[in-house]
Image (cartoon, rainbow, N blue to C red; front, side, top):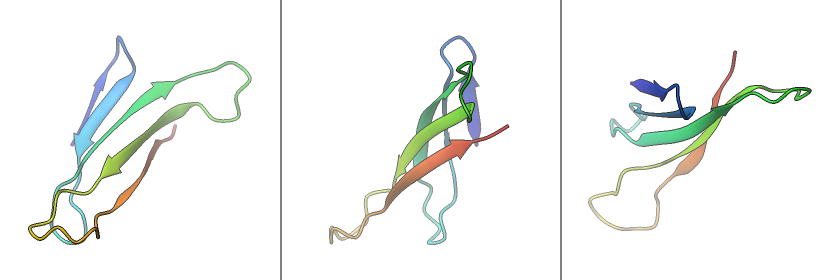
Length: 65
C-alpha cells in the first residue's frame, strides 16, 4: 500500500517482504530546482521477529518519476 499526504509530501505504506512479513515504510517527496533527482526518499525497518536475534533488516525506499 502507499499513501501520500500532498500538503506535506510525506508518504507511507506497507509492503510484503520475501519472508511474508509486512514491514512499514515512510519517507518524504521533494522537488528541488536544479537537482538531478526529484522524487521521494525514505526507509523501512523489518517487523520485530518472534525470537529477537538481531537479524532484522532495514533499507531505503526511493520513489521516482
